[in-house]
Image (cartoon, rainbow over all chains, first blue to last red; front, top):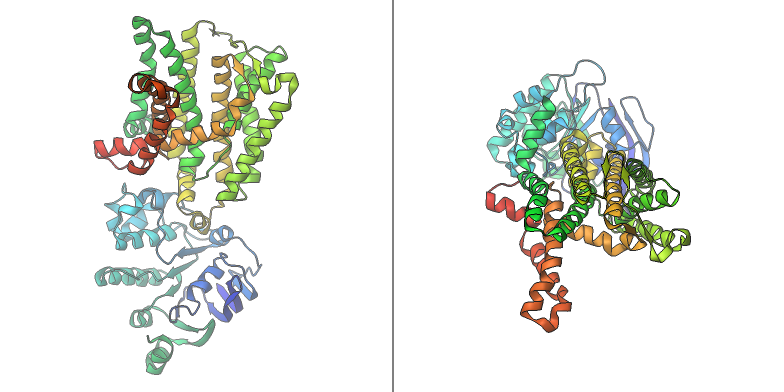
Length: 233
Length: 328
């Protein structure tokens, strides 16, 4: 589905990624962990084509052509829920959702306005509201719903629970678990190790632009040292 | 029926616009009774500037593209009439088609080139193109150069424009049609994407849509509406000179939009009403209050505009919405 090999990227003269390699198989849920500034969002932006690839390769759905525009990658099937949600604040909830609807490239179109609103009933009550009139939790639901409307083959969530009340966080985690059970491939970035260990099958820890550890949830739980060494504050 | 529903809903959301349109439709009855033909002339000028501002507002207000050269399209539209008449073509419908075609093609070329940039570079490039066109027409001695050329009111087969009220209602019809067209455009998926681009262009791209085609299309439509305004302007003024496309005219259009309310359907027309009325009334008021300063009425005009920008968020339409307790 997605395969990163020795990926290097950065901003201007500052290199951030120094050889990131990991892979996501179809239907799998992979987490990306690490402290602030270790390259998580940079990795996502490089996958999404928003930052140029400076070294290594990224194979997306069997296509490793470098230099693809981000709108081509989105059409190929990457749905990104970006850090900070980035709702279109001047559009209504309906417009945020319907404008970017795209049927699935292959197989059945799972996500339509109706199914997305069934997933997030809260949004159904807010259809005519402008994006900037929503609470943080509603905005996050809208950001996820908006990404699902493109019927992505791979869903990427960058800090999807950041800054939300605990009860809303739990709703988001439950929703992700449902998506995973439905067979959605997911790459998730978060700071909540416990929730990630429950959700994801495979974990990658980033440290200074490199993947320093990979393993499954059992291995993650078995080694408490990992958390303190790479993830503790 | 769907279109009718959208129309009624849109009319309800943009009451100010439709109140103004009805007002302009009825205005000649009042001026006819009160025998004030001069005010018809002013009303036509307001409608024409409002129409051009509406066109610019599609890119400036809805698309967030600060084009500082839209007067060039108004000018090209006007010169389409002048140049056709120079070559003996007097049919007004053909003038309008030519203005739409020329401005559409020009908008496509300028848009295609200028929209590769953004921010301050986009402002400067659109200004540069407008200046190029301005000096092109200054240098065309054949068409009057700097002095401009006089124009006969065009023949509109069914509508003979020498009857003054017919020109009035032709302009009104163009304004009303463009308003309804723009109302449908901004509510269509195309219009929503344009507004999403203003809010966050890279996010639109990450959602799988290439922004450039949307921006160029918006730019072309906007240029064509300005061209239509220009063609009618030429008939109204019976004269066209490069002054119509001077960069200060582009600035005037922008001021009208900001005064009225960026990114609202009613804003440009309301802005044109207030802008031109102030321009007309302030000198008179100054003449009474401070006769020796009457020529410097702009000393008052400027601060009024600044006050609106500073204190009325969203321009006059922002005030209207505050008073009627509505946000959008």
